[in-house]
Image (cartoon, rainbow, N blue to C red; front, side, top):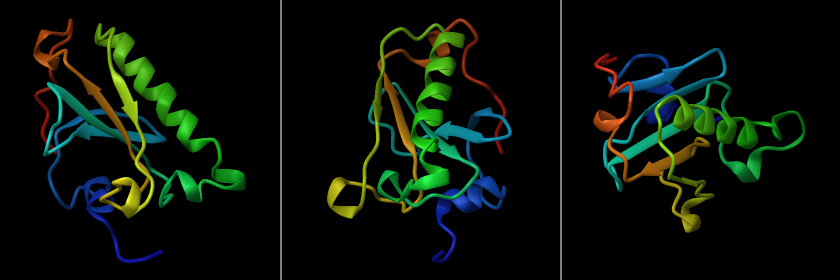
Length: 120
């Protein structure tokens, strides 16, 4: 692995992030440069550089992130959203750590549970 990315540092709680979901496998937090009312990044706790690197025992990770995003949307009453993976610098991936973009025009403050107030 190369040097730790910003996502490694968020996972280690070395830098703050607005965390909106966490379980044993996944961490989700708001994007600091949102491209929609709701822009959340879902990352696995197990490092994988990109979708292109999800081989063999890591192949389940992209689908797992999609499932977590779907569950998040259902729990927050968000019925319309986009899910996006960027792969490699030529594909727009800015951080070499697999992450799923969850984008919606539904603001979290208008969802049934609202935006979490917890800051990490």
